Image (tube, rainbow, N blue to C red; front, side):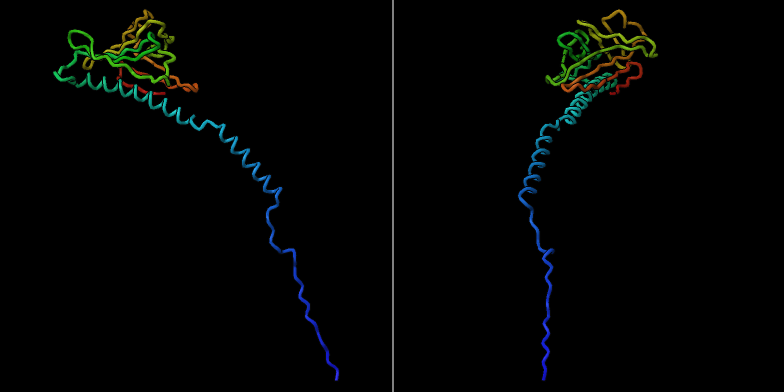
Length: 199
């Protein structure tokens, strides 16, 4: 009697065994991450924030003017004595390193002056008056000059120290603000239609 013995052979595929990162691959990955981290630290993440701060500051000046305008229209009383000012004024001055001062006339003298705080972060680069028909050349406010907006009830007037800007046609004042990273924001006040806008 002949017995036949068969053997079953199992082939193991060694190519599907698990692989790990090699030391070189880990070093390359760490180097790339380090380079990206160093590059990111040089980015100015405050740029958008500074731009927003300039926008907020300009809007604060705009709000200040609008408050004065509303007080003049409403003949709003102020102080403990319930005094009603005859008129209000907002001075844009090129003296004292550029200033914006708000005050009111209490029928005898100007008082209650308050200044806009620039906080050493913002500056005025120019103050100009403009012809309402947009035909005249811009006139800059030069040293020791003041452009004043006076509001008394429904009457508004733009006074200017410069003789080039005193005429009736000059009814628009434009103030340009600047911050440390050379960004600009302009506030335009039209004393004819009472509108104020930023651009």
